[in-house]
Length: 126
Image 1 (tube, rainbow, N blue to C red):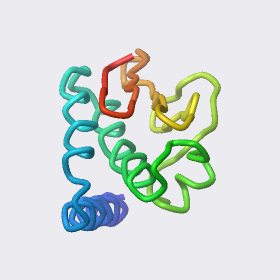
Image 2: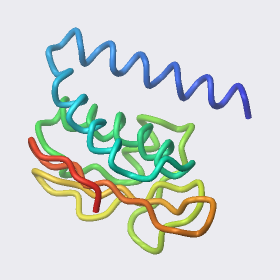
Image 3: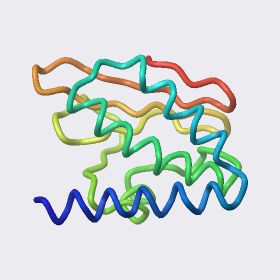
């Protein structure tokens, strides 16, 4: 488990470094700033990792369209991904991926839902 967390963390650091070098850091910062408003739970930590992956997809493609569980898993296989459905603990559910926005959801340890919506330029908790 520790090795998987380290791999995920290293992958996130590598992605953020690449985005900084490519000039896309401000978009990543905006996406992650919205997560500060979410509850400080295991679910929001999971969404932070997922938001880095989604932001990397957006930076590369100029759109969230096509960002689904399959593409997300290929970018960050350390996380568990799902397309739609009820949020579950330890799983990032992707909903409504469009050209300009996507919602990432999960369930926290107490069974509550945690959600972040990444929008082109505006990022807010759901």
